[in-house]
Length: 95
Image 1 (cartoon, rainbow, N blue to C red):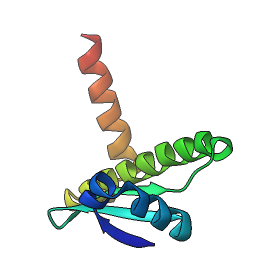
Image 2: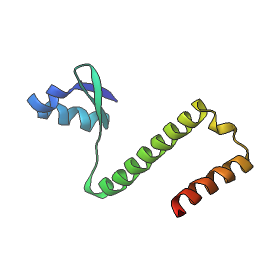
Image 3: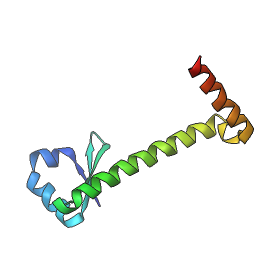
């Protein structure tokens, strides 16, 4: 996997395509920050890669939710406390 400046994609697309073909994966960087992960894909694999990308985003969101939960101490709630919280939210929605 190689890291390329974004300007290579913009100014020298042929070089970008060659690098992607040889490496299979390229990280694009702009102003010193990584902004994109580019995967070499064919029409046959693009749909499965899009599905996988969605799954990866969902897993990343879940990891963030769990991290925030640990920071707030919510990972230590008992089953009874969790049930009480759920019931309180349901009651608030009902009335």
